[in-house]
Each structure stands twice: as C-alpha cells, then as structure tokens.
Length: 94
Image (cartoon, rainbow, N blue to C red; front, side, top):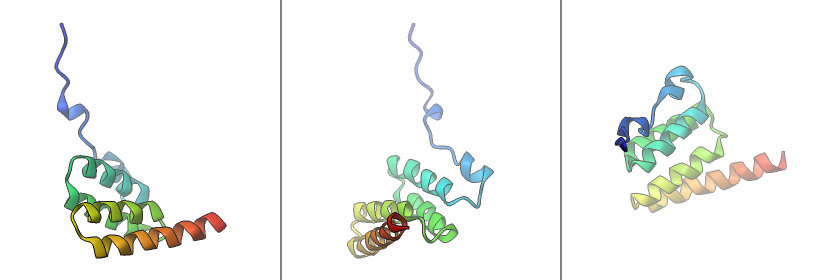
C-alpha cells in the first residue's frame, strides 16, 4: 500500500537560520525555499537579510533580482542584478 507523502516533509525549514542567525548563506537558502513556494515578499525579506549580513554576497543580490522581476519591480530588479554582476566580477578577479 502506498502512503501519502506528508507535505511537511518538503516544507522549507528556517532551521539553518535559527541555528546560525548571522550567516548570510542560510538566509539566501531560506529565500530560495520561500521563492519556490511563491512566497515572494518573504523571500525578498530573506534575501535582504542575507545582504545586510554580508553586503558582498552576490548570490543574494541575483536571487533578489529574480524575485523582484517576478513581481514586476523591474527597476529594483535591475539594480539588484547590476550589484550582483559587480560583486561577482570582483570576487572572480580576486
């Protein structure tokens, strides 16, 4: 007999954030999970927290741009993308 999957098993958990509240990558991962659930405003908050903790963490800017673009906030998305590109170039050349 097949058992029905428990939806809680695939729900994003902020456990990384709870365990390490000062780690930007954990907020970025939380944002990715929230974005997949179409919780765009919450994802934006998570990405902005990642950026606040580590202003040089370019993946958070890129993901923030993706999410803002999905909400039609093109100007803000463009700024986030530009910052991601700028930081990635600096990181790659270092």
